[in-house]
Image 1 (cartoon, rainbow over the protein chains, first blue to last red):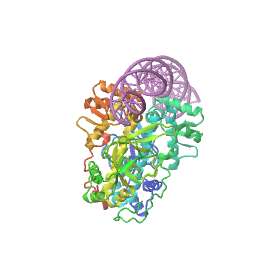
Image 2: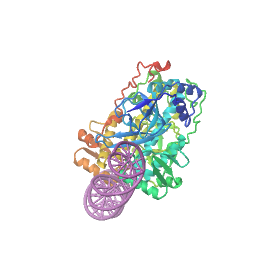
Image 3: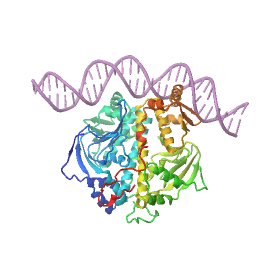
Image 4: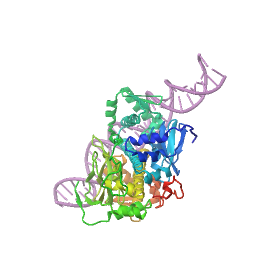
Amino acid sequence: MRRKVCALPANADAALIRRLRRHSSVPSRDERALARLRPRVAVVAAGADLVRQGDRPDTSIFVLSGMLARYHILARGDRQYISLHIAGDLPDLQSLFLGVMDHALMAVDAARIACFPHEQLQALLVEAPSAAAALWRQTLLDAAIFREAVTRNGLRSGVERLAHVLCEQFVRAKAAGIARADACRFPLTQTQIGQLLGMSLVSVSRAIGTLRKDRLIEVRGGELRVLDWKRLQARAAFDPTYLHLDLGPAPATNQAAEPREVGARSFM
Amino acid sequence: MRRKVCALPANADAALIRRLRRHSSVPSRDERALARLRPRVAVVAAGADLVRQGDRPDTSIFVLSGMLARYHILARGDRQYISLHIAGDLPDLQSLFLGVMDHALMAVDAARIACFPHEQLQALLVEAPSAAAALWRQTLLDAAIFREAVTRNGLRSGVERLAHVLCEQFVRAKAAGIARADACRFPLTQTQIGQLLGMSLVSVSRAIGTLRKDRLIEVRGGELRVLDWKRLQARAAFDPTYLHLDLGPAPATNQAAEPREVGARSFM
DNA sequence: CGGCACGTTGAAGTGACTCAATTCGCGTGG
DNA sequence: CCACGCGAATTGAGTCACTTCAACGTGCCG
C-alpha cells in the first residue's frame, strides 16, 4: 500500500480530458469543469494493493502510467484477475456509485496514478453533463471488456485465450499511444496470466511456447512483441468490436444544449 | 423478432421508478421527468432475438416480466450467455452510449418489455441528474454481475458454478419481488445452462443430479426450488456482496460534503 | 399416438491439471 | 568476477474432471 505523493503537477486533468476526448466530445465549458478537479497523484510499487474487497473508497483512480489489474479473491485464496488497465484507463470508476468494493485493484508493475474524489466526479453530473456522460460511457466500455472476458474464458481453448488477451492488450496499448509498431508492455508473470485466463501456470507456459514456435509472438522481460499480427488475430478469433475504438471524438454532437427542453436534440 | 405492441398503458414508467428506488433516491422532480418518458411496451416470444450483435439500437429495454439473456456468438457458431435478466432489469442500458452492439439480447421465455428511446434517457442527464445517476448506477450493478461471471466460470468447478448461478438468480428474484419463499422461475434448458457456465450439456445434467441427490435443490418445468439455502450457498461459495443489495435508497453519503460551491446539495 | 425436444445415464477419450525436476535470468554479496 | 539464491519459466509424466459419442427415457403437443 506504499504510495508516494508526487510533487510535480503531472497534469492529470489534461490526461483525463485527452482520454475522454478519445471517445466523447467534451465542450469547453465541461472541459473547464474537468480542469478544476483536484486529483491526488501518487506512485505505487509493483504488487501493491490500491483498493481491497470490502473497502469503501471515496476516490476513483486514473492510470497515468504502468499497469493495474482488478481481481477477485475467494475465501479459499484462489485469485481471478478480471481485467488489466493501462495509461488512460479509469478502472476504479466502477466504484463511483457502489458503496463497497466487490473486487480489489492492484498495481501489476510500478505505476503512476491520479485519485479523483468521488464527490467531485459526482458533482459533474450537475455541473458538466457532457463530461459525466463521457465518464459514464467510459464505465460502459469497461463493462464491454468484462463481457468479452466471460466469452474468452468460456468458449476458447488455452492457446486461443492467450492469443486473445495479447491481441486485446496490444490494441489497447496502440489506442493509448503507448505501444511501438510491433511491441508493447506486458508485465504479467505466467502465474498471473493463468489467474487471468483460468488456466494453470504450466498450461500458460506451453501456450506461450506454442505461439512462439509458430512465430506469432515473443514475450520477454515484461514486453510483448507481435511478430505476425494477422495470424495472431486469426488464431485468437479476435474481433475488436467490443473495444468500441470507432467511437469517434464526435458522437451525438451537442454543443449548445438547452438544459430544460426535453430530448428532441441530443446533448453530447 | 416477433413482438406485439401492447395496448394497455402497463405503467412501465412506474415500474422503472420503483426499480431505481431500490438502490437510489429519486427526488420527485426527477421522478416527474421519468414519468414523462414514453416507452413502447411489447410482448416477445421465447427464443426471440431482441437485439443482435452489430445492431445500432436507439432504445434501451426494460424488463417487465419474463427472462432475457445477453449472449456472444463466435464466427464458428458457439454461443456464450453472459448474463440473465428478470423483471426490473435494464439489460440494454449498456448500449446507451455505445454505438454498435457487441453482444446480442434475446428472450429466454415469453417476456414483456418496455423500450425507452435513447434520446429521452440521455436527456435525463441535463433534465434530471439524479435519475441519470440512478441509471448509471444500474449499469454499474450490471458490470459487477459480469465480473462475478468471470470468476464463477474461471475459479469454480462444474457443480459450484451451477450452485452459484442458482444462488444468484434466487437472490435476484427475491430482491425483485418475484420469488416465492423457496422457489423462483428458472426457464433455461440444460443446454443453455451449459452455454452460460462454460460446460457441456452432459456435465450440467450430472451437476443438477448431484445437487438434487444432496437435497439442495429441485429443478423442474422451468422452476427452481431451493430445498436447503444455507448448504446451497456454502456449496457455491456464494457471497452476495457483488449484487450490492444493501445500497439503500440513500446512497453516496456525501451529505455534508462540500464539493466546490456547486454541488452542496446532494443530487441523487 | 407419433414425433420431437429435452433430459438422463453409460462408456471411452482427451485437454488441462498437479506433481516434480531442471533450467533460466538476474540481483546480491563474498 | 564468480558463487549463490530466488523467483520465474520450461519440460516430462501421471491423473482427473470434463468432454464427446451414443443409447435410452420422459414429457408435451399436434
